[in-house]
Image (cartoon, rainbow, N blue to C red; front, side):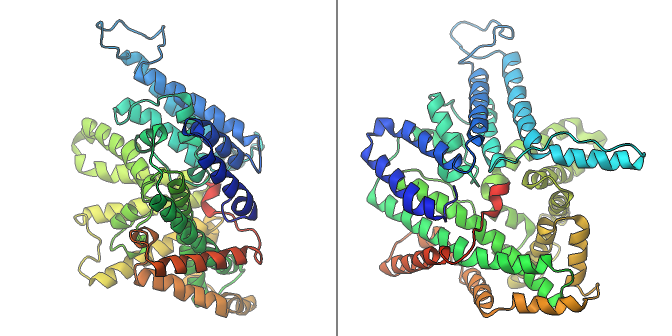
Length: 489
């Protein structure tokens, strides 16, 4: 169930909030898990079984890692009173946590990717193609798998205490504001809030403000920009200026779509007393790629840094790579961001996108943790960084590597625009779309971000939010269904 939909806005949300505040606090856990499973299973109830499986697997791993449950065949005698799990049990449980989650995610998300790659290799040698299974991709599987896996990893590292109960952990994994498209919350941030949290009128009003502006970002900005991007990327041939407009539109679409969802998730959490961490901080105003990744999808960046980059570089440092220790961070960046690309999707375009960002980060590190254009004025550094990010989004958006290269060629005038290219500007430069372009630019130029605006709720801000929300609701009656881009990840 997506947030900007009639079913969610007019039925699910009012009933959910009404039940939540009428229900005694001791029943909030059971109510939340029921609401979360209902919200997630609305389109396909069978997906709830996968969510339950992931929850039980990771909860059990956490119990074994913490030592509250024992594996008798792995338990070694510990000094009396310590109550610590055996080293073999901790490592076995950690291996099960990592291996089980990666196998679970790999089966549903990457089986087709492996099959296509294998068939290409077989074709080189004249072999017959193979077909495994056709598996539906559960909505949001990457988000809740990483979220659930981080629990066992954090418990192993001592960064969080084990969950008080299976119910608390199930709510942590399935909490419906964060379930479909993140942010990737960590148990160390939400565990205490699941046990007890405050509910105030100020927090509820902030939540409504966050939700209203987040939905406005999605419906009023991201969806029109998505129509421009779709028209440009779907064209057989496109003029260079329309190609740049399409890439710019997609840059705005993916930002306002995902940051709008994160704002709505934050708002829904505040309405029920939860406080989530910020997930976006105006990333297109960054002056380097390193800064961009501190501002873009912050929850994923923290996950990758804590569980891939740092452990990988520490392990490589112990090996020293035969005296080539200076290359370790570069290897870490490349592996981490190739993994980041694969996390987003099972296609070579995502691998190339992640590899490009890894390469750009390596170049910045080689230049002393500065961009190669560090000598330019600040506004020029911002434009240069945004240009690099915009070009990388072409890889992210294109269906194939060939399609991405063809589109990049069109952007730089390296391909001949055919007769059909004359039709594209008429689709891209419609007055309504041009107004949305201007609005997206002004939001960045004026540094208007929901998190900053919500710090003090003045009457003018509330009126603006109410008007934007009303326009968003009205737009829902006139446009076709536009799912969240990140829900497919």
